[in-house]
Length: 328
Ligand code: NDP
Ligand code: GDR
Image (cartoon, rainbow, N blue to C red):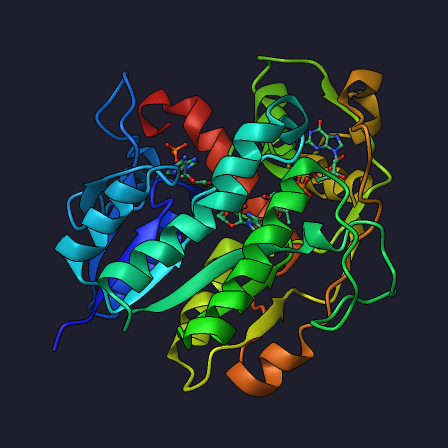
């Protein structure tokens, strides 16, 4: 029997790669997406992967329980992946209440819709390494205490615990992936890796001269979205639901990540980088470094794409976008 998946946030980076993975596995893929005034649905990323005609879009919003319940009733999914969120940490200080409503309470809306209309469905929640925040242990694992440092991270922590609570209260097959930063050519332009690779492409093409960044001493454990959506699927296939850290086990400064991007096109980062105090955050997560040992032991999962390979792929994609604007 063909399995059915419902992905919230299908128009985002991970939604697009997860849809691609599930289609390749023979799933019928449904994606919850919100309407916009410029297009029925933002299918830019699905088009980039050439799968926009293969997924079935369901109209809905994470803040609207009735629409979510209707979606569950209509689709009757075997698996639900909750990837929708206000996901940009810096915006969460400008829009803390919206972030709480979507990224936090939105998780309860999805869980309630499952409980009411499709209680056999398996559930994946997109938790985040941002929940660790003010770091308590040099390498963060499933047992490291949390100390969120932004309204986004506080909302994610709520989503994490309500997922565990629904598993314990109602026996839902609900798993939570504590994913460290992961990027790709489909990353939103506001996130630091893509901001850097896009700037490198524009500087190389003579369209820009400088790149303005905030805290370049921050360290992140960066992996590739394609590897990370595979981990999501693996979690949902386990007999027992559980929580897993997904990370590479290597951390790099923003400064060194920039260097990799500039060197790829023969430029020197120091000739173009400008530090802008307005880009610093009210509270920073200085360093993240994940311990993926449990995922390796129980899921057989490991990251396969290095930071260098990924940044080069992103720079090349941005060069292509600027050479051929129709590809954007
Ligand atoms: P993106 O920002 O690329 O995608 C977010 C998605 O959520 C988009 O499809 C967006 O739709 C949708 N969305 C936002 N608000 C709503 C709403 N109110 N109702 C319905 N849909 C909504 O994020 P990523 O793909 O990078 O991340 C996927 C998930 O994983 C997110 O929950 C994120 O917080 C989490 N995460 C991401 C990590 C990363 O490094 N990428 C690491 C850890 C966790 P639209 O296109 O209309 O804006
Ligand atoms: P992050 O990702 O906040 O870790 O959240 P982001 O790429 O925005 O920032 C990473 C680090 O880079 C520093 N930085 C800058 N960041 C941005 N965006 N723009 C800049 O100009 C800049 N200069 C320095 C930041 O201060 C930060 O330390 C991402 C998101 O995908 C979340 O949804 C997800 O949960 C976490 O990763 C894990």
